Image (tube, rainbow, N blue to C red):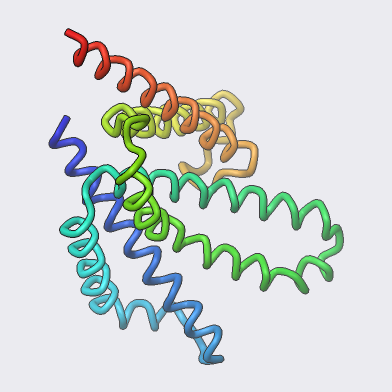
Length: 205
């Protein structure tokens, strides 16, 4: 279990660091008015790797595993929740293509800003869990989130297979994303509850 938690910590920290760097870099280009191309990203890939490694090193050395896992997992989950709400809102309120195009820049800005959520929640969790950490069993929480994600992801692929619509293993629509979001949340909560219950039973013996 310790190996699983360590590997997962490095993985989610690396993903969160890359998301944060790309988000900040894109926002900087947009605010400065300079043209931002995919080639810019490719040319700056070494810088991306270096900065992301620095962020990872700082987080892992300065912050314990518990807030990193809790913050990043919740952050990744919230990104998808906000994206689903964001898309649904604009599809519902802006019926015509003209209205949608006029407001798409706001949606894109939101999509960029929410990429910072995992890193931000790591720092918030670091201070929160210093005082209130008895309610969270990080092993159960992480295992539940992992099992929930892969189970709900496999469920969506199975439904696509049954409906003869398995043309891609990603690019889920809102309904499919909701299956993954809800499934992951349910398993995460159950994993945390079961883990905490087993931990308390062990302590009583």
